[in-house]
Each structure stands twice: as structure tokens, then as C-alpha cells.
Amino acid sequence: MAFHNRCFARGDAFVINNHFRLDPMDRIAVGVKEAAALLSVSARTIHRMAKNGSIPSVLLEGRRVFPVEALKQISTNHAK
Image (cartoon, rainbow, N blue to C red; front, side, top):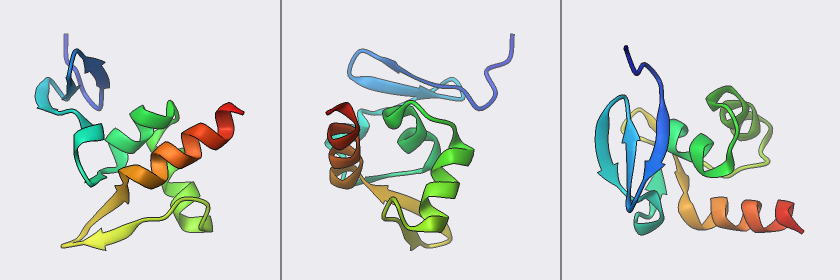
């Protein structure tokens, strides 16, 4: 069974494509797949939100990253 483009939480780490990574909440910024997992939306939705400006992002060495604090705020605002 292949785990292509899968991202899910396991304890204090995230598993992306069968590779463990640090908990995104302990980092300053995360990539598209991790941002999507944190907000429980698709990667395509994250790209769309970045394009229309509803989620802040930065292009860092060719990789789009999203500030974790901004993701927390978006998550909190939508929970209300």
C-alpha cells in the first residue's frame, strides 16, 4: 500500500509520505501539505487561499511556506 501525498498526525510528530517530521506547531513555518493538515483542508484549498490573500505565505527558496501563528489564528477564528 503506497502512502502518496498523505499527511496525518501521530503523537508529537507528523507523517508525510511515510516520513516522520517534527510537530508543525513547534516550527515557525510549514509547507503546503502540513498547512492543509493543520486546517483540515486540501492542499489545493491552501494554494487557493494563498492566491486570494486569505492566508499569509512566503516564497522561501522556491518553496511556499505558511507561518504557524497565522494558521493558529485562522483555525481559532473559524472555530468561533
